[in-house]
Image 1: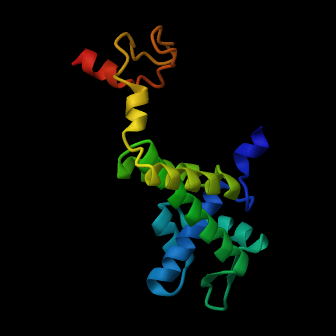
Image 2: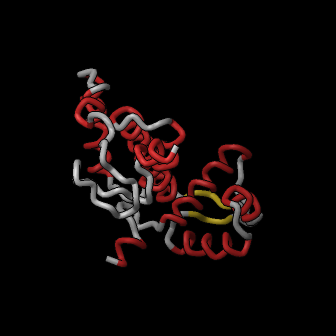
Length: 180
């Protein structure tokens, strides 16, 4: 289990390494090159941390560094970035279109989930979203969920006697209205 938390399919990149690759790609797209300083600024971390991570990415064949110390994505790195972006877009669309989450919430969640799904899962999510849209099912989920549970306490880890779901981190919407 610990191994699956550190490495994700299909590239075997850690969550952090993925963000480094995306920062390299973004920097190259914006200014034509990527330096340790640019990546550190983009990620809000130290240059030393970036240097260590970039050495790992170089060793793994995702990036190369030229004589000016600029980083460039290798073919493997470009494929990994394309895969990350595709999976992010699919997850974000699923969360927005099917689950009805806000664009901001969907984007934030997608950043966390893009590494956790592999390409076949992303493909299935994409097909589900297409089916959902083709059949105009936008209100179906809300109908199935029904109104908020009238007896939920909203206390973390409490199992609701009505719906049988666990309140997570006190985030039950009904608990907010009860306390108001």
